[in-house]
Length: 355
Image (cartoon, rainbow, N blue to C red; front, side):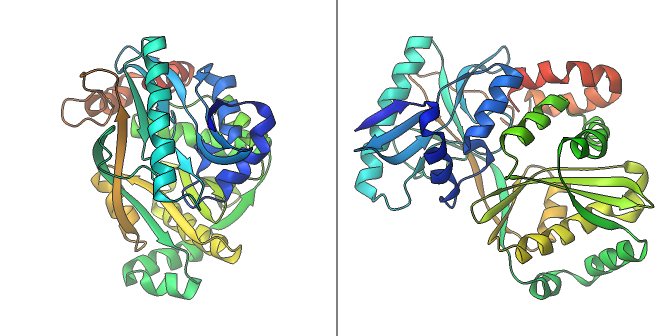
């Protein structure tokens, strides 16, 4: 009865465990592990808590070395979520025991590797106030129950319903795409344009292709087309009863068509019609995101990082507030980095910051 290192023989049970958990997300799945290892060569720190052969908790993470943010175990890099998931029927006493043992295992790994901190990105199963961990509120996140389309429509303000009607009048189409060719030719060019506009280093195309290969049943790719030309794309991940949008991209020349509004509306209808129960729109970090996400009548909940440290030092993260690296980086990236150069160096900058 203890935390055991991950091995491939537990992959099927691990993924079933994650899919049956209400807080299970893309980065908890084993296909995410393989994709990050193959693309970024991070060393994994994955542990499973077994009791008599029964899986009672999982922890996915990677050792991450950064000149900016130090040496940390991160759960999970390149994503908004991570941390421990407990068996849904685990009681408070069992969770406390498992978490207490995890603290000892993680601290031992940090000391052995001479790493500074363990960072978990919104670990929903760790109760706020546990004295072993440091809780850092960062922003809010947006979620909502997937009601029937007529309820979703009634929840929208009249001006937002008019935006969607106009998009429909323009003849926009929303289709689910499948396979690597759609990622290569329809999604990724729009993704590169959007990352340039936002001032964000892009992931390499190989990262998305590997996610598609390792998680074909979970990856949901949609494209908005205008006059046979892709003008927007949306990537979501279906895990259990939840759909979580991780990437929205669009052609700035088509903003007058409002393809992003159209894409979200059509995606909500698609998700409800296929029986999903919860829509996770992710963190809300700046005013533009807040305006766009709130209009879908989202419930706003706290979003936080949680840390475990063997020493007194305070961890750094890219969202640490005024003066953080990310305050200036987007403007500099937009102004100084040509698109072609950004595509070549994006992988290395992403690897450095772990986002």
